[in-house]
Amino acid sequence: MFALSPSQEAVWLHEQLLEGSLTCQSTVVVDLWGYLSTDALGRALTDTCARHRGLRLELVPSEAGVLPGQRVDDHAVPRVRRVDLSRKSDPGAAFTELLAAEAATPIDPYEAPLMRWTLVRLDRLHHRVIHVGHHLVHDGRSFDIMLREVFECYHIRTTKSSPGAAPIARPARSYEEYVAELNGFDNRYRRAQAMEFWREELEGAAFGLPLPWLDRTGTRRRGVAGRLRQAVDAGLAARLRELSRDQGHTPFTTLLALFAELLRLHTSLDDLVIGTAVDNRPMGHRKTIGRFENNLPLRLRPNGTSPARSAVDGVSDALFRCLPHQHLPVRKPVCAWARPTAGRRGKPLLPGVMFSSLGAQLPQVDLPQLGYSLFERYGADTPRCDLDVVLLPYDRRVGGPGMTLVWNYDRDVFSEGDVELLASRLEHLLHGYLADPTAPFASTAHEATALPLSAAAAPDREPSMRLFGTSGQQPTPQALPLPTGGGPNWAQPRRLVTESRRIRLWPVAEQRQVPGGAAADDPLVEVVGEGWRVVLEHDRFVQSSHFFHVGGHSLLVVRLAAWLEPRLGHRPPLKVLLQNPVLRDQVEALREIAEERDLAHGR
Image (cartoon, rainbow, N blue to C red; front, side, top):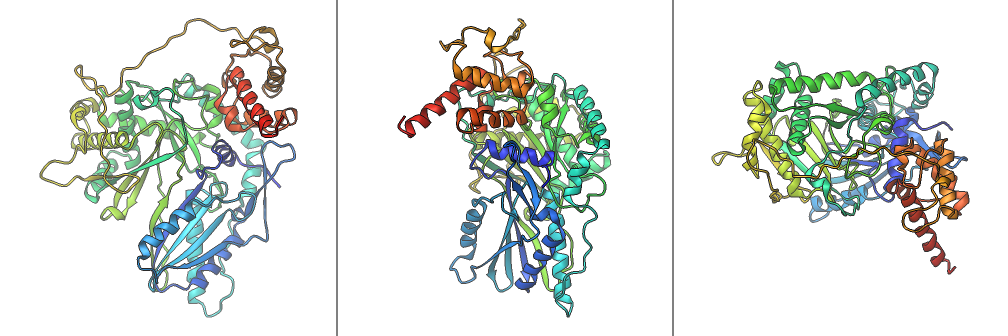
C-alpha cells in the first residue's frame, strides 16, 4: 500500500464534499466504423491493463481514519459489457438512453479497476465504445495513452497469425514510483521553492470574483451542473490559429486573454485569479497512466486600455512564469495566501472560475479496415466550480477543424441565458481582436453592451459561433441590466464593505459568552474547540473565528473529522464542516446532526 498523490488527494476530497455526485468520473464515447473484431478489442484492453499498474489501482481504508491509501490489484481485469442495439427501431435514441445510464452509474473506488467499457453495436459496420473512468486513476492525457495502446494491441492481434500477447514495451516508470519520487528529498526542496514562488505570486489575491450572478444571497447550492456548447466554425478557427501563430501565441492563450477581459468588464476588477488545468507530468512519466493533472491559479491583470495584443502577451508571460511550479498542489497556495471573497464559503480547492484546454487528440493508429473518431466527452452533472470553460481546439463535428468552447456552470448561480450572454460577448471580443489586434479591448467592448445575442451574426449571414444548451436546443437569453454611460462596464452595482478594525484572537475558553446564548462551557463547544487546537496546533482562535483564516486547510478538515469521530460517536460529514468554517456555526451544525440522530434512535 502507498499514499495518494496530491492530485489524487484533491479528487478524493472533492468526492467527499459532493457525496453522491459523479464529478470525479468522466465518460468518453469513441465511434468505430468498419469491420470490428470485438474479441480482439476486449483482449487488447486486457493487455493494456496488464502493462499499466496505474489502471489496476484501488483505494484502501486508512487505519488512521484520515486519507485512504492505495494499492495495485494484480488480479484485476477490465470490465467489458457488450450491448447490441442494431435491432432497435431507433438505435440512436436507445444509445442516448444507454449512455445516460452508464454515465450515471458510480464506480466503487475501493474495487479495481476503476473503469469500465461498454461496447455497443449500432450496425454491422458501426460500433461505439463507452468508457467510464474514475479521475483517481487517470486524467485526460492518461486516457489518450491508454486508448493508443489499446489500438496498437488491437492492430497487432488482428494482423498477426498468432493471437499471442501484444509485444509492446511496458512504460519506463509506474505511478507508484511517481508517488515515491514526490516524497523524495529533491522534491521536498522543489516544493519549498514553489511555495516561495506562489507566496510572492498570490499574496493578497482574491480567488472569488464578484460577478453579478454570484451575489445572490440566500441561494441554496445543490451542486447541479449546466452545460452550454459554443461551436466555432472552421473559418473563424483558422483565422484565430493563424493570428495566434503570427503573434507567437496559441489559440488557448488568446482566448484566455479574451476571457479575462470579459470578466474584467463584468466585475470592474483589474486583478483576477483564473484557474487552468495543466498536465503536470515530470520527465520519465510521459507514458505513465495515472492522475497527474493539477490546476494552476493564474493571476492576470487586464486593464482594457492597452493594445489587445499586449494583453495576450501578458497572459502568455503569466502562464510561462507559473508552469515551472505546476507540481505544487493548488490548494496549498490557495489556502495559504488567498484573500477571502464575498459569496464564497471558506477557501476553495479550486478557483471560482476556470478556463482550460483539452489539447490531447485521439491517437493516430492505422487500424485494418477500421476507422475511429471521438463522439463525445460526457461531463459530470456536478460542477467543480462556479464557471468552468473548456476549449476543445480540434473539433471536426462543427465543420472541418473547428473549435468548441464548453461552458460548464453551476445552475444555482447561472441561468442558461446568463451563460449565453457571456458566451456571445466573448465572441464579440474575439471578432474585435481578429479585426485589429492593436486596438484596446475597451474600444471593442463598448459596442457589445447592446448585443443580447451573437455579436458576429449579421442579418445577412450565418453566425460563425453557435450556442447549444444542455438540452441541445438554442437557449433563450435572459436580459441582464447593464449600466449606461461612461463607457463599457458590465458589472452590476455591488456594495463594497471595508473593515478597518483589527481582531485579536483568543482561545475558546477565554471567550465566556457565545453570541446566541450558548455558554462557552458547553460540552460540544469544548470538544470541537479541542479538535481545532489539536489539528491547528495552536489555540489562537475564538468562537467567531474562521477555520481557514487561522491556519486551516482542506486536509486539516479531514483530520478534524477523524479526530471528532470517536468523541461524537459518529463521523461528521466533511461537507458540513467545510460549509460551516466558523467555529460557532460548526458547533451548531454538529448539534443539529446529533439531535437528528437522537430522534432517529428514539432517544
